[in-house]
Image (tube, rainbow, N blue to C red; front, side):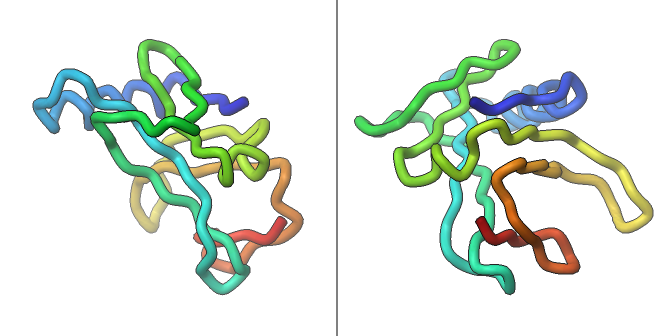
Length: 107
């Protein structure tokens, strides 16, 4: 469902270790907002919800809720460094367009 590049997986693991909580998962979700209508969210969570899909990737559990799952099918999380800074980037084959800053998309 979701792919994570090796660089992103290492950065996620580093961030999780920095939280100091042993049972964290990474939740990726989609919500309304941004200039293109939809935006992504990434957050660490200790507990799963009943409707979560759990995607194990390189020792990380990724949680995806039922609403977000169709929008994230085949998406890839990467970690990139540019002149503007470093951070996670989501490449989504389901997005039909995005805003100029790349922070939101439409499907």
